[in-house]
Amino acid sequence: MKSADLDSLKPLEMPPLMLPEPGVDVMRVRLEETYDVEGVGRDTVQLKGWIAVRHDNTRPAEGEHELTWNSAITDTEFVAMKLDGVSKIFGRVEVTLDTTTPSIGQVGKLCLPFAVGSSLDAAYMPHRTLFKIDEVAANRPQGSPYELVQSKPPATTTTLVTGDRAKPVEAIIDGVIRAISAKDPKAMMRYYSPSGNNLFFGQTKAGVVRGGDAYVRELGKVFANIKSIEVKRNEIQVRTSGNLAVAAVTGVNNVVNSAGQSGSSPWRWTVELERGSGGGWQITHDHLSFFEDPNSPIERQQVSALAARGACCLAAISANVAMLDLKLQMRTAEALQWYSEVETIPPVGRTASVSATPVPLVSNGRQVGTLTHGTVNFREVVRHVPLIDVTRPELRVASIRVPTAGGSR
Image (cartoon, rainbow, N blue to C red; front, top):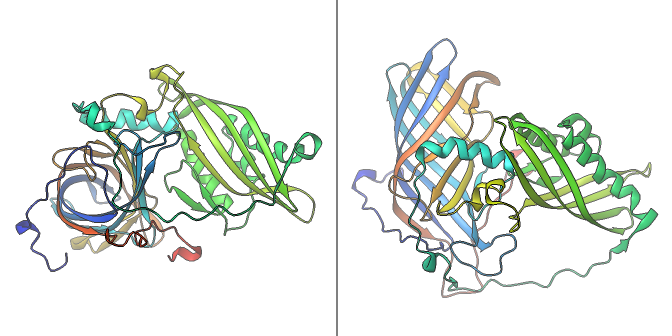
């Protein structure tokens, strides 16, 4: 793309309600971002250029058993970006992808916790269009031209424990639940291993977080939009093997957000723990997912449960912002959350994407400004690079990357 004539590339047709094959799509885009720079001023800058996104691992959503437009989730990763604009205040502005942090997301039947979903719902309201979704097409099973090689699950050597043997692990789980209900990240921290090498998958902006302390800090940011949260635990099953334990837990969050809206978010939680030399258990990994409760009133469910809005698309993008005339190089201190509701993957035309919350802009380790808001106004796919040879079913070369220690991948 560095040598391509972007304006001369012809747009590719994107059929609606079709799940993507693994590949990279390059989109020609127009968007605007509002920057507030200390000592300089505030301005909304019109940007244009291109963004490259990898789509991979389309699969049924939680609780689904077949692939349809309405039931699938597709993982995404932004792999390259080049945007340019001119501001009357800042002069020339160049935006590129911060490649030191993966910019990952998902599109499809997303189940988001109520606190997150209500915030996105409010941010997207001015841009919302009710798609006239063809329900027959949206619920049509979509097979794949290739089959994934399925490996046998590893044989388990864990033992199901109950009663007094399960109580020490249950105490850790219940401690975390009490801390969340109290919106107290410091209290949560005591139950997590301080090791910086552990991976955590949860409903955070980063998606994948390395290290228990960092993970709890990310979870704590969600509390900013919550007035009150009541966490109720239902079933718990504990298995142990020596100094290792796994707990499978279900429950529901009853939430009132900062705007006074209330909602419920049913969840499933898998927790891995390790027992230290002192005999105490600490969490070394957890994976939290939310799902729709078919018995819950529609107004109390997540964004994805609302009808006729297309598939939900949520991506966390880390970027570099260069104001060339000011000789100012900045980057987003945390990933910027972009949200949209789409009927094609990737979205095309005037399907809007909006940023959910402001993020700090830092330079040389110090905050010097804020990216306060962004809106994607137009995009079209101009190149597609497949990432699988459909004539070779045994090959699967697309993958979503996760950060390793030190930020390398």
